[in-house]
Length: 149
Image (tube, rainbow, N blue to C red; front, side):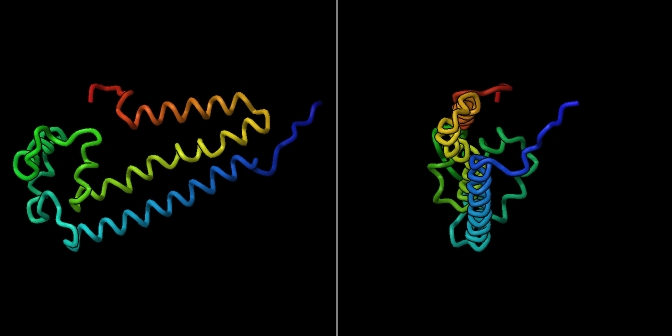
């Protein structure tokens, strides 16, 4: 009968990935708290006044964006995709920034481990990590999309 050896310690790449993920998560969480406080206290005025926001909750996203654009933003088109970045001066849109950071931490983790994977001769995992970075980056950019949204 053959014995199966179980690796009991994490690889350097796994530890690096976990370290970056942990730091990114705590940074994103802290930023969520800060931006939400800025929004709630009125230090940064929102695009949609707090006393009116509940009236828009029942709307589907597409209708919500059209309504707030018509009533408050007055842009040429409703703010879809990455247009929210042009509205970071508004407290309610500033809250999107930490969410985007949290979503991007995984990409940073993969980028960080790629050199170590190649150095160890783990080309298959390195290529998969590169593919993951490309797919996640393209998806976040809006180049890749599915579902007709």
